[in-house]
Amino acid sequence: MKSGFLLAVAMTLAAQTRDQNTFTSATAIAEGKRMYSFYCVNCHGMDGASGRGARLASKFRRFGSSDREMYQTISNGVPGSEMPGAWLDEDSIWKILSFVRTLEVQEVAACRSDPAAAERGKQIYAAKGGCAACHTIGMGGGRLGPDLTTIGATRTREHLRESLVEPGAAVAGRYRSVVVEVKGKKVEGVVLNEDDYSVHLMDRAETLRSFLKSEIGGIAYPRQSLMPAYGVSLSGAELEDLLDYICSLKGGRN
Image (tube, rainbow, N blue to C red; front, side, top):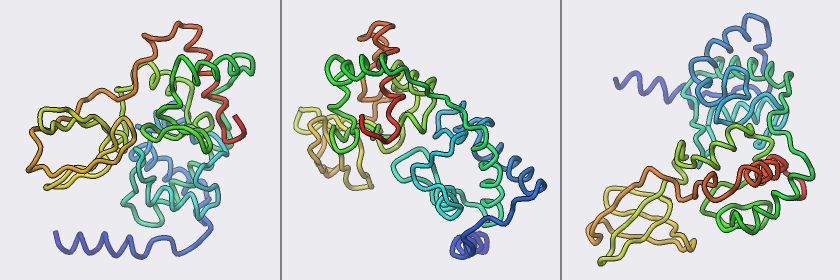
């Protein structure tokens, strides 16, 4: 057990000895595909476009597209997201990256957007949807939900539709909801940090709150998201327009 742990640490410390991927042969890509199908497929799909994770069938990379930057994303993960770090040796990560590069060539336009519908959806986002209260686009908006600035470049339309209609289907750890009972009152928000003695959260007013567990009456973790289900509050046409707007968010001026 101890020797295995030390080996894992040694592998981590020795990771990324190069800045460019040298594992580009057909054999390396095939091995990368095999490991991708084991470690990555559940979130990204074998085509890099059909999973709930970031769309890989694209040349857009929010955290950098160089070999070095993508290696770091795979190795370290993305804090605050569903993307964990990969506890794999350096060569394995490079081989997975070689396969991911083959998905980029496909450049699947999975989140198309009609400009006229997107303009209508922008009004729904700002008014009836009330989305800006919890989500950031560029420099404006709330912090309770994920940043949407580049969401149209990293998610499929199907994933975004599910997020609007069934927001509790898959909630990233960073946005896990919590309800703390203090002196007969309930405080609801998202968990920021928790240990054996305390819980830290951001409430619906985006106020940072800290509570000692010894002083609270109870704590619960509802499975549902703080985000409302828009399949109920919006018509079918409004939902599609909102999707068109969200799909248009690719990091430019929106």
